[in-house]
Length: 107
Image (tube, rainbow, N blue to C red; front, side):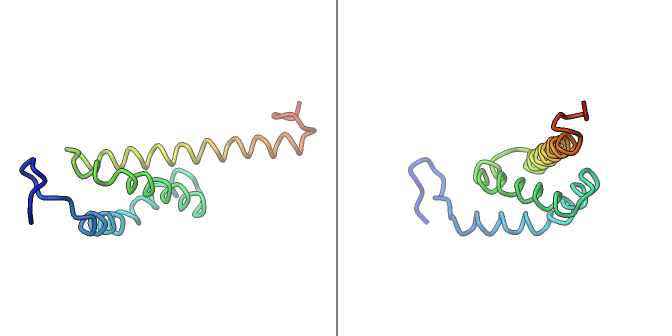
């Protein structure tokens, strides 16, 4: 394989895609277990984990160059779970406000 002029072989998108798929398959159940524990819902956990994997996939070539890929991926997962929890709380507050006369907190 010819190099790119910088002494490195060109990236192989198929190899990157395969390595991402392997990473996802290997970690998905652990990520779901964590998200379920934090969110209390299979559906919310699945959405948060999917969002985390989308973020990881979107930056996969960059993630592969990181010294601590696992830690970076976990931090993305935690952020997505926290965002999902915040979204769910806001939705609950809106529903509560609607039931209690239109104002959050029932005032």
